[in-house]
Image 1 (cartoon, rainbow, N blue to C red):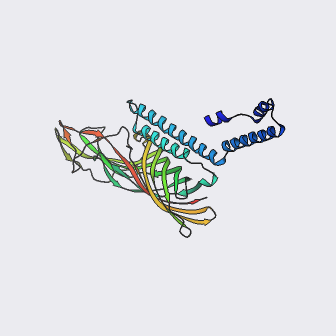
Image 2: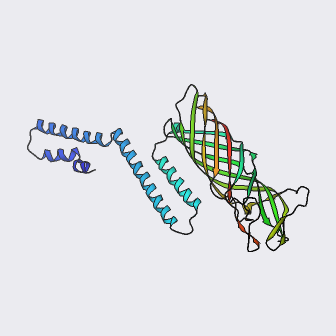
Length: 343
């Protein structure tokens, strides 16, 4: 810019200045032509397409760096407060990374690929408190909108909207609310539904014949939209002497009821996503995609749920002649098959 300021003058100004001098006509013409040539060179330098592209890329990089610095500072400020949650931190990190990636490339219409897929899965519950017991998996169904932003033919940012069902069977122990001389086993079969926004980094091979292989990893941010469970409760322990409990069997099978459990499930779900698969070209840009994905939540699924702590033999833990009570902690995971069409 300094160079331009020092050299930004008009030909008419200099020609006017020369015209006041007593120069021969031929010298005036040569001076005017030289000045016009200089101005044309300056104009070409300023408007050179390659230079424009370099400047534009530099500005984009500066904007990306500013965005990353600002978001990082904001995240550090929030983390110094007591109100910040793990999910909020995760959202800020993903938001910052996504914007940095989006601003660091110039996308055209050919840089986007969109599609639709169905995604049946096998899901199960995971106990992280070791006081409730996973009892089995469930087969569920889901579907998704796929949106890939291609940086090159080999690298992409995987976005979209994923709607899926998940859950599993668990068993845990609670105090009988009607008579605290008894402990009850609770058998629950969770049926949970989420809307998830995936943020994944996708790596693709070069096309081999008509087939391209890919692998991906990243995060998913989910919102719970439905929470139900089939639940059965039955007495399993009876207090015979203060602090001593014996098994209690009434015989028969407990009756299972479908119940709403919105108050027992946290609204947000953050998950790790790892997957891989292939894309098979059909015609033009249309391709069949088949993939296998592992989706594992790492935030607690349960909210405000208490249970009786148990030992390694699944017997109740007693402290001061009373059953020891703790919070229920755990999450879901699933393995899904994704089959769809990319356009």
